[in-house]
Amino acid sequence: MTDIVCIVLAAGKGTRMRSKKPKVLHKLAGKEIIKHVLETLHEVGFKNIIVVVGYKGKLIEDLAGKDYLYAYQEKQLGTGHAVLQAKEKVLLFPAKDLLVLCGDVPLLSPSTLQNLVSTHRKNRAAASILTANLENPSNYGRIVRAEDGSVVRIVEAKDALPDELEINEVNTGTYCFNRELLFEALDGISPNNAQGEYYLTDVVDYFCQKGLPVEAVPLKDPKEMHGINDRIQLAEAEKLVQERINLKFMREGVTIVDPATTFIDAGVEIGQDTIIFPFTCIHGNSKIGCECEIGAGTIIKDSIMGNGIIVKNSFISESTINNNCTIGPYANLRPGTVLREGVKVGDFVEIKNSEIGRNSKVSHLAYLGDSIVGAKVNVGAGAITCNYDGKAKWGTEIGDGAFIGSNVSLVAPVKIGPGAVIGAGSTITKDVPGSALGVARSKQVNLLKWKDKTDNK
Image (cartoon, rainbow, N blue to C red; front, side, top):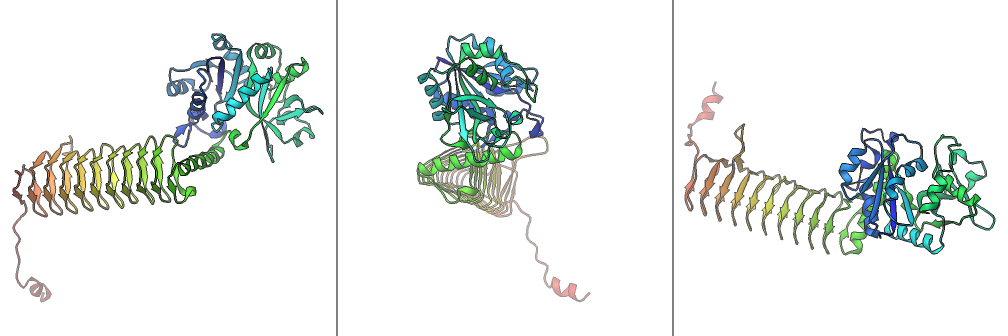
């Protein structure tokens, strides 16, 4: 929508977070809090977005990027003061309406914002307030109504009288205003309150005194208004977001055995008929195909995985896994790993910056680093590539159909030709031609009756 301007208030330091970075830059389901807010606005279709920043605002600008305008609130003098700092930017747009929301309230849904704006316009209100009814209103501002149900004012909890504290309908901090009337009202309010700040909520009182229409638009799900002021509320929000994400995937045909112990970031994609077992974490922009089995205890980060993959209790980071691979248990696939179709990676295997060819097997206790492995290769238990000489990394190439015996050390740079066989326990320092047998180990010596001699001493 280009006929409305959105202001996101993100200038607060977030003292209760006890952090060196702004509150809105803390992550929720793998994504910064403010990104959740901005992406929701984009999902609705809002185009004209101004972010009010203050404490370490450059960090927020760097994260959000150049798609937004920024206004600075140097001193934290309240929400009304914050909106005034954005006035110059707001006037760059001809839009009549102004949506104001907080950068630390990341759970608002697109439908909620759409409903707020449409109700505001339908009733031609001077201001429309998103409200919620809570059993325990706590420190939220109360919505004070007249006997006929019309909104009289919003009173902050610190300024409320005892009977006003009994009110269950609260202000969520999200508003839609008539732009012209809003700035007129902001010019007329004063900081006569417990905090000595310019409250945006005082605008409602101003409108009511002028006889201008003020609407209260109740939330269907009060959980959406959950704000984040400290680490405890961040954890509570994480639980709510995870619940949403897991429900979404289950409705789309993904089996999540135990949603309470499954953690999936907001940017993840998972295909139908995939099963996610307990204590699994899937982070970043990971994509998992159909009919996979993931878990238990698996951690996947920023990785692309095809269909029919089985992963058992393993760690996978920045890797690409093609169809029908089997991984683990206790495998560690580090950044740059590529498994072609049908690869089997055994237990306690570590692979880094390597491509493993179609239908190859890397057995238990092996390590492959900086390697290109062909198709139908067998890498035996305990085999390793010695890719680091103390100063530089070197590559290893293993041709199609090669057989690498157990406890082999391939000292890079080295090439093993197609169909070659490397004898168990060998330390290979030179290239091995295709179809050749490579053996590099000392000759076995048996000392007869050695045990008898030592026992007699």
